[in-house]
Image (cartoon, rainbow, N blue to C red; front, top):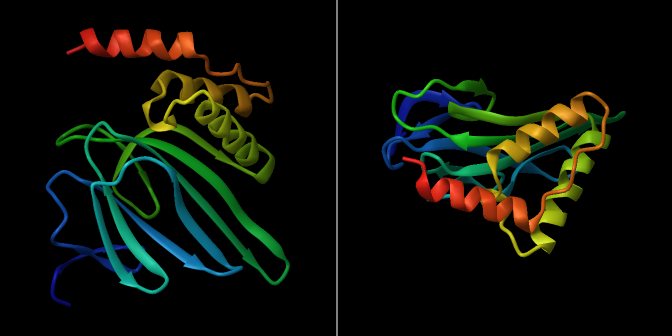
Length: 172
């Protein structure tokens, strides 16, 4: 296959034309069966493999949400959301299916009630006029910890976001 190398991702070879140090995510859409999609984030690379699948890539340090859902004849079998920070060269990372090489995992939840709550919190952040990809990574860790413990997470606020932006502007 021209344009691809022999390493594999989601059953497909990885594209050779992706920018260096890009975190690649294999997305699939099969109506009523499989949905792997990006909920938020800003891909810098995209390549269509076929009518049901494509690969998107994220620059180091960018944050994105990867939603996976699947069903069979008996109902939903997978419902999960992962929020990751794309890693730079040589950084340690957690590996995930369909994500190469992996990422800094900020949130990892499964089960529709928890996934739905994260999607609602994402909508709330957007309602503030804030891109969820720009929200403080610590907030996504907070949401992960609280929902894992069965406790309602605090809402993200404009003040919290401004504090994150100020901190980020002085961090190396």
